Length: 236
Image 1 (cartoon, rainbow, N blue to C red):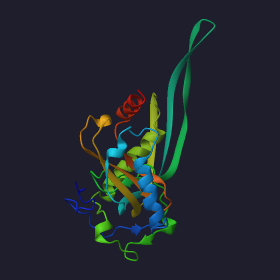
Image 2 (image 1 turned 90 degrees about the vertical axis):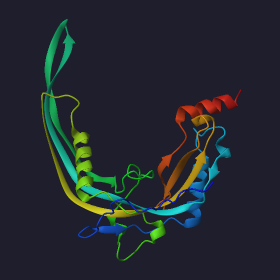
Image 3 (image 1 turned 45 degrees about the vertical axis):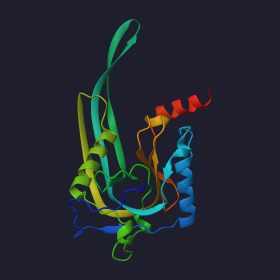
Image 4 (image 1 turned 180 degrees about the horizontal axis):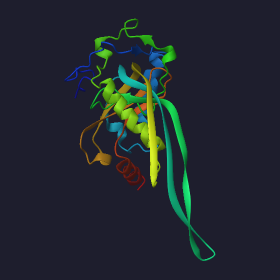
């Protein structure tokens, strides 16, 4: 049974006019990357006991677009808390400042299963302009998330980083400094599993390895509880 193509055009492709678009070159060798991706797909402490019966696809190289949003957030809040001492309840004021300054990655393709935005390391110092290092169509995932939408998501994440859990008064300020669209190279292995861990329903899973440093940056695996139950059953 064949796997569907990973690279398909989006319903509404994003225009790159006026966008700072970059590509990160491949620095982790193809043979090593393919080997690490194959190993990651077949191993793991929580893999189902019958994972070896899965159907595996060949390793694929893929360039996935990410918005790299640089910004900062600050908050000031005032609240109240209570404590007990000498048999009495005492109300004390709480509050203070919080600050975050960093780059946030946002996946630039909606509804795409492979998402390295939470784990990947992405610095622009090694990036090349897209015009200087073009990507083959069969390896390039086209973006469809606008800069405005990416900044809105990043702003929300910046706010949550510094927001107090409870406060009588809170002031939060978020400042976005820059945004760049960057294609990150990955080595991907997909596999189809239908076994004890997912009640025999054929489902496609994947692991994705960064073609920059070989780190695991995206994965979808069989359900954890089902995998653990499968392992326990294999011992009896």
